[in-house]
Image (cartoon, rainbow, N blue to C red; front, side):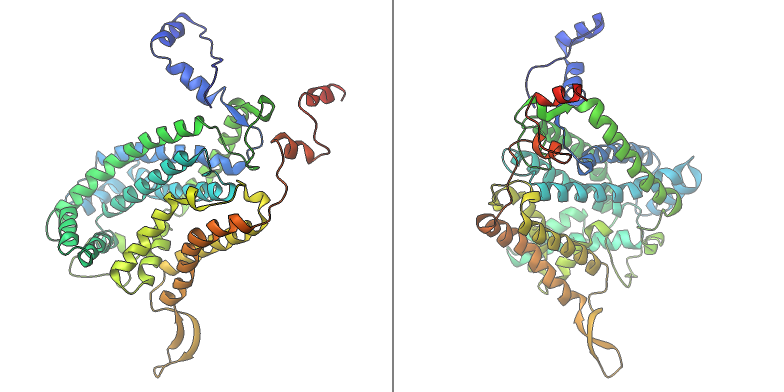
Length: 443
């Protein structure tokens, strides 16, 4: 939140630097003295967790790039060499691989929190849009990184995803093929493709870091949202970011790192695929091509539509919808804490995304609900593909129907006038501004 700075240089070097490049002042105002709503819960700590995840991915990625060989004949063996011959290479590789999953886990919680508490509403639309750009860059970075080990799943994942662009031929003949050939750097997924993906995988995290800087800047202009959705109205509604939220965020980061460390040291391959430990073979297609878990809901959307072009539209449209959420939600109340009906629809939305993730990991023809058996004795009924269509429809219906209509017709609960009201009313009646300190003195 822009305003008067309370920073005072204490040494001659600080005064000299502050007059020329006030970087210490900026850090103090942004991370020490920054006025933060005093009622933020632990869902807000995932912003700091994401910052730590990004740093971990960049640092481990730079070190791994020193030993990786982006050549289709050598890439697989270079990864194995990192695991076996580089000092602590196994740990760096497992941190980087599992770090991608931790990054997406944290970003999905962060996005869900934003949707639940209405953090995308005015005046925070640009903040939300920048967050969506970060998410899109994360998806591109993760996909390209998944190709680099050059195992069976890596290779065929690249084949499947890049071939999606050929669907553009159904709109403008020849365009899809041209785009696919450009992505491949030739007429098939091969060495040129691997080199391109390695270059972009190395570049994109630094682009993410730049957009994160803009994201933080966009946050500091209107200030943090909070669980009530009520705007900060006085200094009594805030506390300095340090030490209150540095300690709280630090505790949450440590707890998250315990989960992270458990995967790295005890279950490093729990989120990976065994097929990816087999060198890429263009002549032997895996029985079941599956992307990483964080792409599974969108993969289910792609497979739920029989037409290739409309499947691609369904998948990319699901991501595009996130960019227009601030203008789809017509409710004047930010937080779903005071919107009972919205909470129900949101809970169903979260379940729908989880079910789509489950569907994405199954074979398309697997039977979800058995109705009978065929002549061979195999179960027949509702397949995974058909089952996932119901949840794809709800996903789109939530954004295109529920958010616009519910905001006009719902009955909301009374919203407090200030942040301090719900904070103080848990233990009794709310105290007016200035009365808190007086009450504290009386015991």
